[in-house]
Image 1 (cartoon, rainbow, N blue to C red):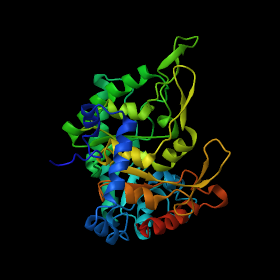
Image 2: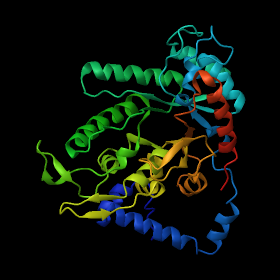
Image 3: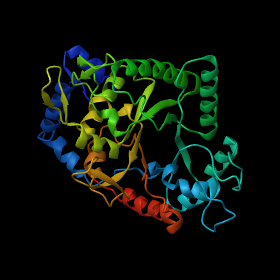
Image 4: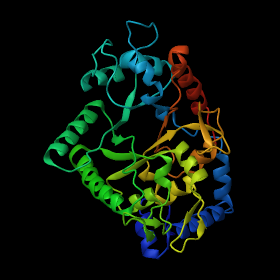
Length: 371
């Protein structure tokens, strides 16, 4: 009898059929992984492949938010790359192959005007050997004929650009309460199915640290009648469990997931006691199924103990997040699209070329990452 792969896309259903909690399944997954390291020839084969490039050449990507200053720069006031066309050329020269948009606007004085047509953007991408993989756009907050028409238009633009994914840079909701996550899951199931069946796109949400904090779903009520304590379920994990894995996907921001690991390692249970609950970003990806995460944000950070987040933004390779372990340990090798992001990359008037310089520095470290 074949042993089920508990890291596969069927994980939530398998977990329910086995009667296991998420934590129990993660523990089982860890145990099986440890056993596999003692499996004789299999272990030798894995070790022999241990020095391979962790990001395939064609999947070296960047979200344009990292170089947003260059995209929005007025070409009439600078000799530096300005606007989509020139920034695409600069990024292609560095070696990037994939682009994630952060909206479609640029300087009004750049070629193509304030909002270039999707067909023009696609031509510029093709001219530079680049592929668009997604966009941090907006997702309708309500489901009406009008909002669905707007959503369809965004999907049609994504199709013109050649994307396989369409998404948002926000969490499904910023709420701590189960009722709001239930509404978000219902809406995302509708939109995800529409994106896939009508447009052939994977709809994805992006996480910040708070999305991996625990739901407030039990315990005494506050003055507004809302629960004040937790049953131990993390917000985004509830969302993944209660949305259709065929239609709703996640772009894990690995930096923010590590901030969540630093900040949200316990919760206050129904009886008022503090319960330890360490968060494992890699284990979470493998438990919910690596195919549920078509994109990553490869964002690095330096250690900042004692601060709220525990990390500060850094160019890729200048921080302490162990990407060799993360990308080497995630299932479905070669499937994911890691997009470099550094929120603090723009240098402002003091150093207007900084973001593209950091794009080059980070690309070199992404390209050379082996495990």
